[in-house]
Amino acid sequence: MSDTKNLVEVRDLKMHFPVKTGWNKTIPLKAVDGVSFDIKPGETLGLVGESGCGKTTVGRTLLRLYTPTSGEFRYNGELVTEKNMPSLRKEMQMVFQDPYSSLNPRMTVEDIIGEPLDVHKLYSSRDERREKILKLMETVGLNAEHATRYAHEFSGGQRQRIGIARALAVDPKFIVCDEPVSALDVSIQAQVVNMFEELQEKLGVAYLFIAHDLLVVHHISDRIAVMYLGKIVEIADADELNENPIHPYTTSLLSAVPIPDPNIARSRKRITLEGEIPSPLHTPSGCAFRTRCPYATEKCAQECPTLQDRGNGHQVACFNR
Ligand SMILES: Nc1ncnc2c1ncn2[C@@H]1O[C@H](COP(=O)(O)OP(=O)(O)O)[C@@H](O)[C@H]1O
Ligand SMILES: [Mg+2]
View 1 (tube, rainbow, N blue to C red):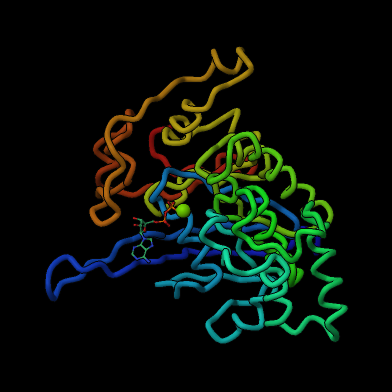
View 2: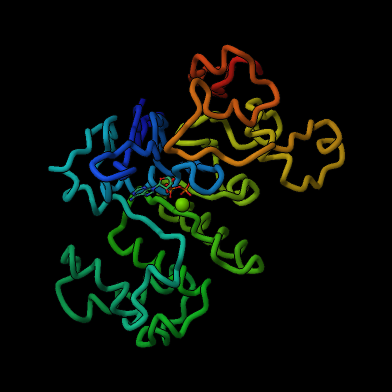
C-alpha cells in the first residue's frame, strides 16, 4: 500500500567519533549508538532528549555531513550511500539551530536563498531566479522589499525564516529541523513552529523535528522519539507519549513540563532525576539510564533493554516498567 510507505527508514544507525584520550590512544565516543525509526511522507517525527544525547548527530549523519560508523538509511526505499547522496541531496535539507551563525551575515537575503538555486541550476534566466526567490520569501512570510538587505539586519525569528526559505528552495521532501526555535525568544517560538506546520500542510514535506523542549515537540509532532545517551528509549504517537509515558526517563522529562490540566497533573507520577548525565565516553554497562533510574535492578547493569512494542506502536526499552 503506497499510503503507508515510509519516506525515511533508519536501521541501527551508529555514529562513533574517535576521541584522543592520551597520546597514541583513542576511544570511541558513541554519540549515536543503534538508532532505528521510520518517517512517512508528510509526517513529523519529534526527537527529544537532553543536550549531548546525540540528536544533532542523528540529523547530520542522515544528511551525510558525517559518514556513519554503521547502520542503514533508506530514502524512498533506496539505500543512501556516499555515492548516491549527491543526487539525493536536493530531496533532503537541514534547518539549523542557530540562525545567527548558520547564515553568512555579509550576504543579502536574495543571495542566501538564491545559492541553492544556483548550485542545482534551478532557473533559466535572471528574472526566473528573482521570481523564485521572491516567491520563497513570501512563502515564509518575509517582505519582498527585504531581498537586498543583509542577514545581520534581521531578528532571530526573521533569520530563521530566511534559513527555511533557503532549505525550501530546492523543493525538498524531507527536512531535518535541528532545534530551529531553541535560540529564539520564547515570544516568537510559537509563530515559527506554526509556520513549520503550515509549510508542511502546504508542501507535504516530512520533518525530523529535533528539540529539547517536549512542549514544542508535542505541538508539532505526529510521533515522538525520546533519546538518552545515543539510544532511543521510547517512541510513540505524540499524544500517547504525553498521556501515557512508560520509560522513567520520559516520565522525568514530562515531570519538568508544566501541565495545564489538573487531572492529568494529579495522576502523573513525578520523577526528578538524580545526578548528571554520564559522559558518552564512559557509558554505564547495561542500560545507560540505570545510574539515574529509580527502578534500576541488577539485570539493568548486565543487559541493555531493547525497544519492545507495548501495543499500537508504542515502543519502550525498559525491563521494569
Ligand atoms: N564532531 C564531533 N566529534 C566528536 N564528538 C562529537 C562531535 N559531534 C558531537 N560530538 C559529541 O557527541 C555527543 C552528542 O552530541 P550532539 O549530537 O551534538 O547532541 P545533542 O544535539 O543532543 O545536544 C556529545 O557528547 C558531543 O560532545
Ligand atoms: Mg544539538
